Image (cartoon, rainbow, N blue to C red; front, side):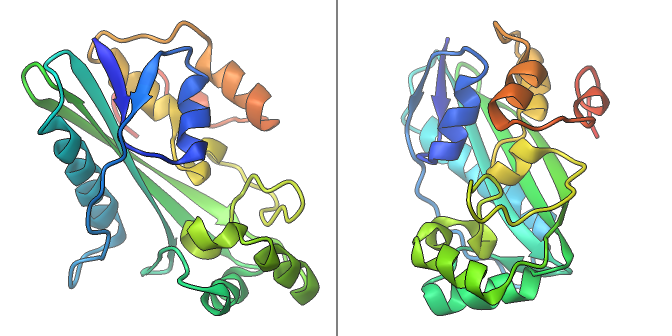
Length: 218
């Protein structure tokens, strides 16, 4: 079997590599606009499924396809990637000093029989009260423009999040412990201790992973 990551995200490639798996990258191009009346969970589940199916249509039978979709949610509002610096500033002002949620859905397809397993993770994200100067300096780097909600939790200078209690990897775009238990259902196990590798890589002490590993859902 060959693992295929249906994303060109550097963050997802970085996180998936922590499992010691060999994989190839095949980005899936799908329409990411929300449907009328669609809620945040339905949105990320639909997009993850669509991405996985798009790659499965032309993949060899030995492939295992991993697709994910992540979005930032403030109340019931889905915040996608900002179109320009002005929208990035508007999003960062909206989120500043408040808590919002990040949702990620996973879809894993076993190409041999097109069996699909889906999972999802939600994390409460408390944003710090960064100054206007910090915010504008961060926007000037261009980093917010390809990020849902206009920020990267892992940015070494801006560091927009303060006091996170949930899954750091989920906010980056790939909840690794959820992926581990999903792949295990297909008989695919990591060669490494994923929680340990994740915490070391992200320099984050996680109390969330025992709730996920070994359970069928959360």
